[in-house]
Image (cartoon, rainbow, N blue to C red; front, side, top):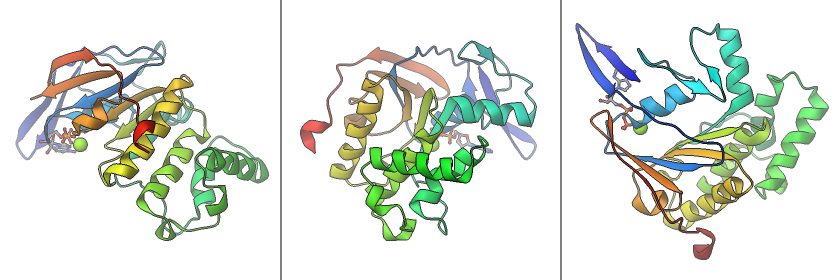
Length: 227
Ligand code: ADP
Ligand code: MG
């Protein structure tokens, strides 16, 4: 897979022949220095962006030339996202944030609320359902974001530096939760530049200047021992 960005008259070649296969149930850390193309790769995998050449196959489906509508259906069905900055909607409560993707699945209001509350419960935030993001701590906000990402039951959870804005203890809290999801079978792909976080995954893929320079299995360090 190749990807370049146009910058004025020139172009920046960011991904230079990425060849990556991830099986169902894996938990993979994508590492590399700033600017090495980690977010670009994750965004292509997440169907937020497209490669210039090469092919991308998600759950047996070639992701190519999809209409916006079809892309949205696939994204909703297959993919959940979490980000460093949480990306919650500020004027919506925790419950409303989690319920939002269910709206796009066509669920009725009551069903959306029930399902959202269930997922908030799974991240131990049922009591915080009516609170706004600004009333929550960083770790709580990320848990709401995780609940939102999981509400539509995606096959693949994509995380771009999910612990990047959190202190160490809160980071390990979040990692313990993500590991538990993986234990239950969810496939996880996460960008991080922290070695301790990467070692809590099961495989580390290192990018450098747009190519994979290392791809190795690791003995997963369990996060719950620190929380
Ligand atoms: P990482 O996540 O590893 O820090 P990115 O994938 O965000 O790296 O970016 C890789 C390179 O591509 C960087 O040099 C960045 O400035 C550039 N880049 C990323 N997105 C765009 C864009 N939309 N337009 C132009 N350049 C971009
Ligand atoms: Mg990035």
